[in-house]
Amino acid sequence: MKANVGGSIILLLFMLSCGLVPVPPGVTPIPVTDTVVPPVTTTPSPTSGDGPMVANCPMFPANNFWNTPVDTLPTHPMSDAWIDSIGRDQGFHMDFGSGEWDGGPIGIPFNAVAGSTVQKEAFDFYYPDESDPGPYPIPSRPSIEYGSDHHLLTVDLDTCTLYEIYDVNLDERSGGSGAIWDLTSNALRPETWTSADAAGLPILPGLVRYEEIAAREIRHALRFTAEDTAGYIWPARHLTSDAQDGIPPMGARFRLKADFDISGFPPELQVILQAMKTYGIVLADNGSNWYVSGTPETYWNNDMLHQLDVLTGNDFEAVDTSLMMIDVNSGEAK
Image (tube, rainbow, N blue to C red; front, side, top):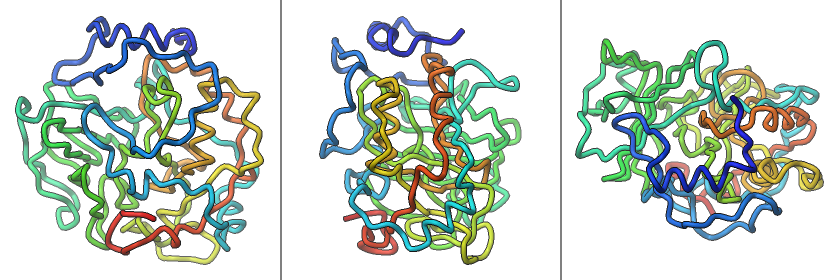
């Protein structure tokens, strides 16, 4: 059943605060700090100076690349070519939602745990030379991406450490690659290293999370995919094919054009659209063109999310993020 997002926000947060929403064993729910949360009925709140959070942990520092606005940056000189490559007339797709598609949840889930209470395991990776050896905390019943990439994302709330594994196989304790991130740091992967994502970037900070809609503000860029990529630019660290003129590199960042009118969309969707204007979207992996990533949640309204299918590449422009860079080996941005 599809939930009515607008009418369920207060109920959702009340149920979470009272422990009425079932949570899989080993997963810590996001705590609710306010007993009353305004319904999403107005334009998204102005951007604040604080970065996004997951429970008590920052989702990287507020001055991290993911969390820095790009609405005032100049357009990248390759903007038109990159958008043509991905698809100027091709529609967007929110690759997350409620219920199931093709037999599994829609989106990339994550697990939030108290690391001191969870068993940690070593993994055998296909790409050990570009993976962090771990060990990695594994909840007793972890939420794993149902799609082909089988990502396993876990936040240790004791240490504010993010663990991400690509193509995880828990039976064999194996995976494609693994990356461990200090959420209080702007450190990047070693140059040319992959992560659990092809761009060598973390996945979780780019996901649309339902609690952000309830809070009426997304304070970070969003992750998206494209079929063809070539090379990489800061802060990405890894490529899947050599650089080529006209093909967007991993790490390329786009924003919804400032003159795109979002006022006719439901308030819930205005939150996402405003984030696309203010923070933009980051090319992080190979996949379907203009697919934007988020977490699977019972409370998403799939019909409402499909209203964003009207977005096309022509509504976006690439931005020159080189002006944000302080150090090529750091995710800190100015």
